[in-house]
Amino acid sequence: MITKLPKWILWGGAVLAFSAGCVNTTALMGFANLSVSHVTGNVSLFAAAIAHSDARSILYIGTLLLSFLAGAILSGFVIGQTSLKLGRRYGRALYLEAALLLVSYWLYQQHDYLGQLAAAMACGLQNAMVATYSGAVIRTTHLTGLTSDMGAAIGNWLAGRSISKPTLGFQAIIWYCFCGGSAVGAFLFAKVSYDALFVPIAIVSTAAFVYNYVSDHLPEVREPKKIGAYHNDKRLSYLLLAVLVFACLFRCRIASC
Image: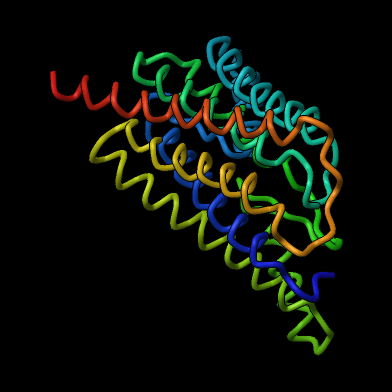
């Protein structure tokens, strides 16, 4: 049970949920019309495609589900644990997510379905980054389990039982931030199409940069970094920042032509 929530966790969960909502709405409103931040609805569509022997949909949705799984596997490989703790390679995982979103943007511009798969992989990676903190489940790319947990907590509170108010507040923040990101994603997609993805790309890249450079100054107990890990993350920070700037300049150049 969470008794006190560190601010870095609060802000991190909020901005990542906002980013995921923006990515998912952009993908959903695009030519593929499929969600990328969660799998439950897509599994139902996959089952319906099997029932109707729709080979094309089976292939498309099946690979989308596998892409989300692949992102989660990549997260487990990079980070190694599911409990949230300073010192783990969240910065590196976030840089990988930003890179996947950049690839997704480029493929979407080519009207290539692989862009949908890259976005799903990015969301799977983000969602698997953190599973628990002080016994509370933390997810930032979908709201089903989180809404159930909130409902159960409110029910216990109405029955006069004690609950973790910081946990409930944190879950509410994630819920509203995901909803807000979804609204922003829908608005931007209607205005600038897939350029809307530059918002979550910038958010995730900034979150990775801030984590790498600020986490060492936070007071919480952390895992010791391996020799050379800091410098590797620093190089990765500069590399992705350069790629992001290049992508923005390239897009501006294309728009002016």
